[in-house]
Image (tube, rainbow, N blue to C red; front, side, top):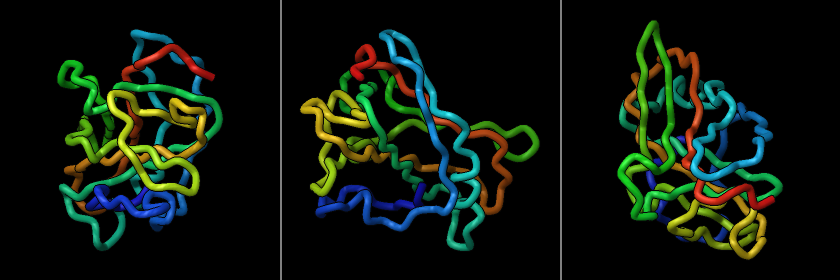
Length: 167
């Protein structure tokens, strides 16, 4: 995860060259099937590191980078599907606070093929490999209204499955 105000830059290696947190999680998803929802493992440790930074302010953007093997396809912001079907970051923090943050514009979900320029792949967010079988990194940016220094107790990203497991 990274504190990421702007993701629209289309430079070579733009996603993968950004500074990252020392916290990371491993995720080994089960097969994806339409029309289900699926979610990542708990990413609270990654988000906690970001909101604890002295530069953090409520409303800042956070980007999660996902890479791996296989191919998964989720509904993107640009899909034209119903409002609310794009990726969502669910956060529980403090004593009983909950926040659900949706991808909010077309530059907030993107795919960077290995060693190449980031590109949007609407109407699909590809994770692992794109539609041509090229491995890469997916970047998901969320504008998060969590106060500086909040204690994150649970966080995960929810996806609407766009295609049956393509692995």
